[in-house]
Amino acid sequence: MNTITTRVVLAFAAIASASFPSPALSDELAKTPTLAILVPPDADTGLTQYAKTLKGILEQERLATVSTETSAPAVLHTPSLLVVGPDQIAARDSNNSYIEETKARPLAILARENFVMIVPRNTKFHSMPDALDLLRSDPTSVKWVVPAYIGKERQVLFDISRQAKVPFGDLNIAEYKTRDERDKLLNDQSAAAVGTLSDFRDAIEGKAVIALAITSHDRVPEIPIPTFREQGVDIESTSWIGLMVPQQTSPEDVKELDETIRKLTESEAWKNETRQRGQMNIFQPAQQFESFLDREKADGSLILDSNETKK
Image 1 (cartoon, one colour):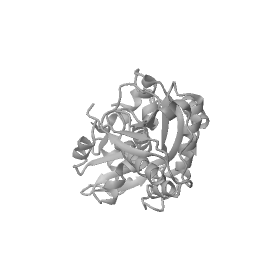
Image 2 (tube, one colour):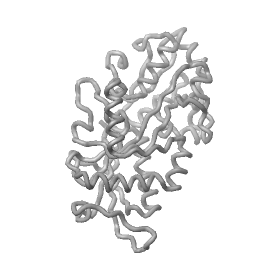
Image 3 (cartoon, helix red, strand yellow):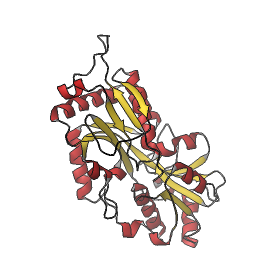
Image 4 (cartoon, one colour):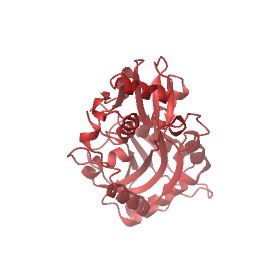
C-alpha cells in the first residue's frame, strides 16, 4: 500500500521553569529518552494531520519536545502512542485489524468529528437533492470516490444510497489508496466523495472543492456547511480520534500518559484548534475509551458487512 506514514517522536525533556513542570513518569519511561507517536500505515490523511497538530501543541504547551521521522516500526514497543480512528479498530473482511495485529490497547479518546460530502468545483450537481435525483434516475451517474479499505465513509455512503432507495451494489464506486489517487479521481464533474471534515478541510477552505453536506445535527459555526438533515436526508454520523499504547505498557505508565494527554486537551491551544477544525473536544481516559470500544463492537458499529459495503 502506497500510504504515506508518519512517525512523530516525542522526547520528554526536563523543563526549567517551575510553572511548566515535566510530567512525572514511571522508571521505564524516565529511563527512555523518547516516546514515539505513530500513524498506522492504513491511516487517512486526517490522522497524519492530527499527528502534526499534536506535535505543535505539545511543544507550545511545553509538555514534550517533538521531532518527526518518516518510517513506522513493524511492531509497537513501549513507550509509544498510536493515533487511531474507527477504521483502524474495525475488523475488515476476515483479516485482523491493525490494532489487533500490533497488540495495542486504548489510552484516550481525543475528539469526535463529522463527515462531509464534497464535490469538485465543476460539479454537475449543487445540492444533496440534486445528487439524490441523479442517483434515482441512474445509479451510475455519480462516481463515488472512497478509500480502498472498508471504513465508516462507506457506511455514510450506504446511508445515502438507502435514502435514495438505490441498492448499494448499483453505485458507481471508484477506490483510491493514496491522496494523489483520490484527487485525480475527483477531477471529474460527476465525482463526489465522503470523508472526515479534517481530511477535506484544507481543500474546502482553499476552494478546491465544494462541501455539499455535513453529518452533524446542526451546522458547525466555524465552517458553514449545510447538514444532510436540513436538505431532507436523514443522516447523522461521527468519527473519532484516539490514542492507543502497546499491550505491554504498565498500568502506571498508562495513568501518567493519560494525565499528559488530559493536560493537552485542557489547553486553550488545543480547544481552539479543535473548534476551528469543527471537531468536538471530548477527552476520555483509558477505561472510558475501552468501554466505548466494547459498546461499539457489541452493536456492530465497528464491523461493516463487506457484502453490503463493497461492490
